[in-house]
Length: 112
Image: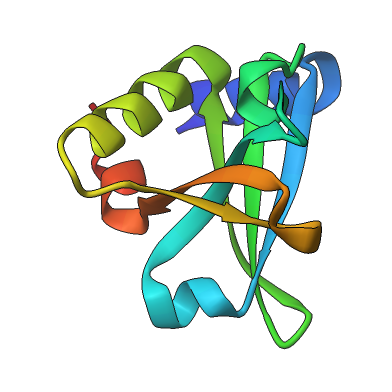
């Protein structure tokens, strides 16, 4: 485990991390929402310059878990999930102007 302790320390101190928060509803739906476009332009996962993506899971304002992915791996997971019909594309966010991929937590935790 010690080697991975150093890996995590490097990610948190040296890596560029995109941080998103998933509030409450993920517990009911089993999905996390990952933004891909907004107002007709690519955004979120499609445009991040980060090396890592951290998705914070909260319930009633308290952190219950954090998922961290290399950007290239998360892109592959999202694409596979949607193509295989488990992930769902949906409009959401402010005024339903963001294109979101609703990805099952099981797809994220099962990896590729």
